[in-house]
Image (cartoon, rainbow, N blue to C red; front, top):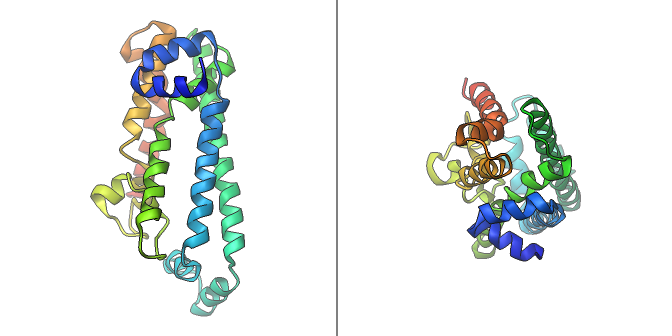
Length: 228
């Protein structure tokens, strides 16, 4: 089965997609699609955004800097530096997160006697994240439709809980957490749990705990810290 067909099946008939991946685990297509999608979006954003305005927004909440230091930082921050460093950082972060997810699944599989290769778990981590590409497309649509170049980083997360519901300001409590969480996350979490269930034949309870334990612990700790 071709990668595009498998991608469509993951979104429309995920059980069949995971059965296919159980026999032929592969991960390069969704991983590259996510990395390149993020890189392209970041490059586009930093090529059009008002860099001086953006830096003023970012540094405005840093009480450790004097006004003179803020001015100097803004003047010495170039568009090329922001674009290049952000593209590299964003791409690396996506790849590292998928590898860490696969490592967790691999270790959890050993503990619970679920015999699958690391390649299987990396395939699960990548293909279950496929809906995130829709978030990238939504952000691209925002850039395309916008009539201003003064767009904050968090505004790019069009489907985030913060942009849609909470509207916590840049320096407010929980801003980063609520900007990170999107309407697409429950879909991706469900896909992961479904993949575990298809591959193990075990209950939904086992599959959900197996798949979502790091999500609950990670986001729970983040919420406790950021909202305290």
